[in-house]
Image (cartoon, rainbow, N blue to C red; front, side):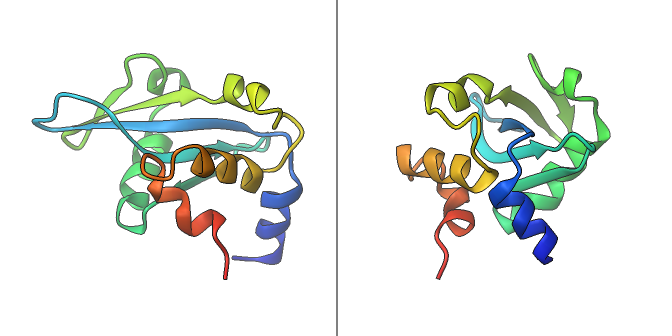
Length: 124
């Protein structure tokens, strides 16, 4: 990652954050698979497992955010839905914190549920 990208993750506080929920074909419930960050300049960053990153990013970039929220959209045999994390950020007092602080707080709350964030918050 470029130094500009790292600086943005730790210092930028103006962004929208969404939890990405996925319901696969033949599944009966949604599971969280990623966190999507959208910066004011419309740069999208998806924090997910490497094996799911391209799939989730393609789904998010193909559809407007409004369609992804609520009931979600059907994409490649899965339903993808975004949940706005504004309330979570306010509740955790992370309104003026960077992306890494948000990801770390989510991971610390429930590492089993948000296992896909581990490599983004635990640095060697």
